Length: 113
Length: 115
Image (tube, rainbow over all chains, first blue to last red; front, side, top):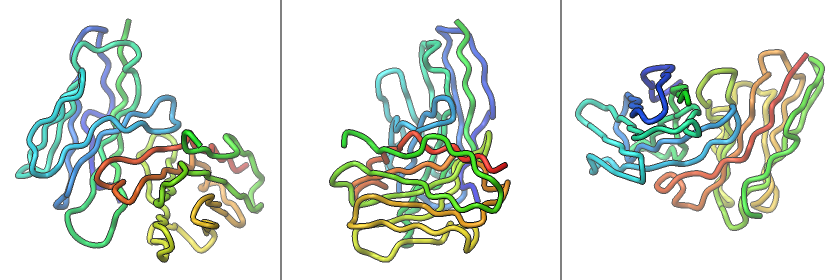
């Protein structure tokens, strides 16, 4: 079953605009990660935020985490056509023996030139 | 190697045939994961190997699916008596022991089509 659910499922914006994607999850987490996938193939790790962190930045990426609402957002500023891809959130549980990431269903971002 | 290598990149097989998918992880990565991604969907966990520990097979959808990892390196995912619903992209990832706390490195996947 999917732990995370991304919102929206699809997003289309003009180059230069900001893109915001949201992720909700169900169980307590150790951390939440965002990945990008181009053309339905391999995923690339973008950024990780731990449960005791509220905000993190990496270049044009800004991630927030609200553990009380079990939600996270990914903001891409000044978007470029090359940012067109699917974006997935993934979580690691805070307890139990499971060590694998559980992925959401993804947001398809299209940046129009 | 420099990255996670998967082969073949594409595989078309007839319903009922067996297929083997290969994953060559990053050298030194002790953890290896298999995921399945159906068209337009998220990633579904299949199996996880960590060093010499017993693998976590909790995600395998049926007994037609099996995987092994020889010598703590290369892994093979085998699907027996393939069905059309097995059509998907099969993704392999590897990481250090700290992978869940730092991120995975994914291969480019094998696109399996069962006709």
